[in-house]
Length: 88
Image (cartoon, rainbow, N blue to C red):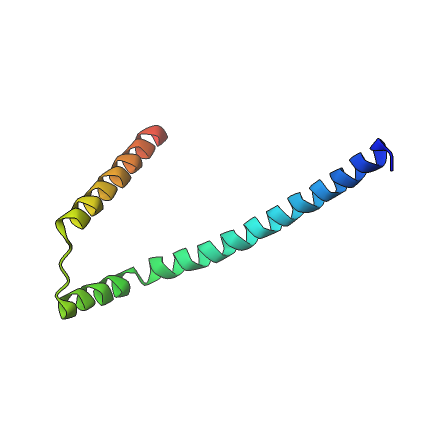
């Protein structure tokens, strides 16, 4: 095989892999959208289930976990405000 044949073979393989990546991305988007829609539609039921479970088990977050939760919440809130300011 000379160089031209190798190049054609590699280009065909590259195109095949690109097509596979795009199909997998589409499948992943469909899956994520389906799950996102489910949780958006059932948000209140899920929150109620979690709060009931926490009350039944007397769940108390440790101070370290509480700090972590607060930090993550702060970062998300900061990011959301930054996005809103960019959109304005």
